[in-house]
Length: 202
Image (cartoon, rainbow, N blue to C red; front, top):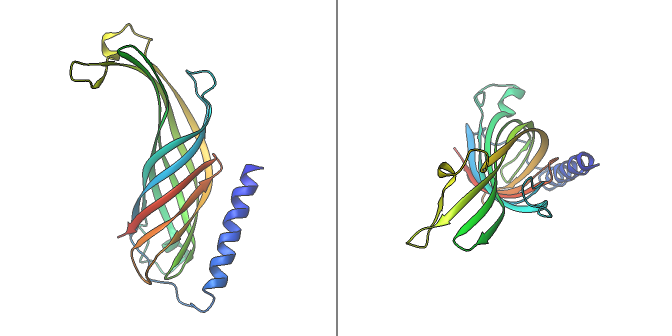
């Protein structure tokens, strides 16, 4: 059901963009790639704290590279997209100690630019993320800063859990100025990750 909602949203954005710019018959020049930051919410399961699963704040970045941007075929719409997300899932303090759960999620996707006008871009993508849910313990030092002390603790107290996730999704990007490299937009995928994006083409 979630996949259907994501694909329905992508189709709707595509239709709206196409309708708004039906008079723009020529695609803009294909960029070599783009880089942008992301911020939003992800839906995740806590492996170390009871009752802490659900929507969590996250931020990260994505790099989309198009090695075939000069090709005169559909290949110039393809992109290889490495990405990284970080989510501070939960933390609890006990005196001078703090228990932390953090999610690290590097991934890589293959993107396809469905729409590429002077103001709007619609990109679909699909790929894999390598998710690590990490539990650590920090101690407050004499300067009031939190310092990770896992290296001094018995093996197995601090630990992590790896998972491999498949995902598919889409992005809607808006260029405030015609032919501008700067853009803002929205990103959503089948892992219930809903992100605001801001970045630039190069």
